[in-house]
Length: 354
Image (cartoon, rainbow, N blue to C red; front, top):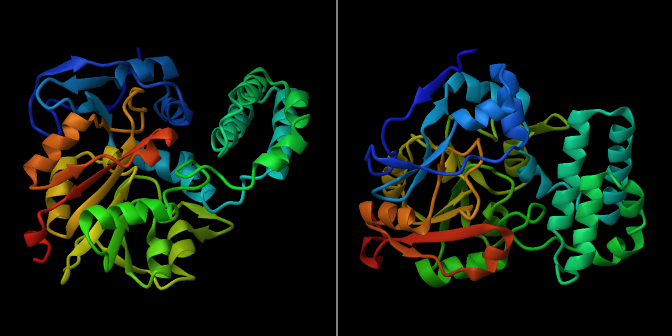
């Protein structure tokens, strides 16, 4: 049997406890498919081996076996260099005409029996349906999802006129809207106070940096070197995601380990914390750089995907906040329909300035 080159994780990366219970495995997705190919093993074996466990002490979900840095580097630089959700937020793909175009491409893939392209367009079409603002016609949308799964392209094309009426704007916090909602900004100000200096790490395209810049708030993209998305290979038409953000705005960039002479009012960490191998250490450093941390994560009603090192129930977030002197605000309900959850960690007001 082929040896899988993985690293053993002997203790919880949040609280350090070695005691953990089995947790349901990650579902199959694009990343498990690509990682299995990199490692030369069956995808089912990969998912069985890179298993989820849950800490008995703090409830954090994490991977007991994790990938070598070279494997993660190859995944995000060669196999999936593009961060699709980030680019989708600025792509213009959310339209009835594009849905029709991708449906035809799906039909081509089906005719050619190209399994990789079939899976790609199946995911692409489903993501557009799931991002529609009005989900009230659930039966009709379910029929569309079923048509996608079954390869019934004629049924998809027959809905073009109806889709044209429906697809004026993507649902907030969905794949094609990102996290740029003014409602989210207002919530952060209500809970954390006025925002004059705002920063984000992670994907530069899908967050509130442009919104901050438009409000004449000093906006900073915080760069960290890591084998992850949004690296040097994350390019569309030759333009990197970082250049797409910084090239046409007043937003500046700052390296994580540069000297900081001012503390951020809010530091946005959107779909970011669950990728880090040392989340507790990162938050300890972030606490020195920011008054409040706006952490957006997947709700944990599904097992963490294979590319996510951790999954965060609210009890684990509360442990994290307590360890670093933050109060947790988790009542931003508007985001939950998207499958995301916001945890706003705020320091006491008298610690706002360092």
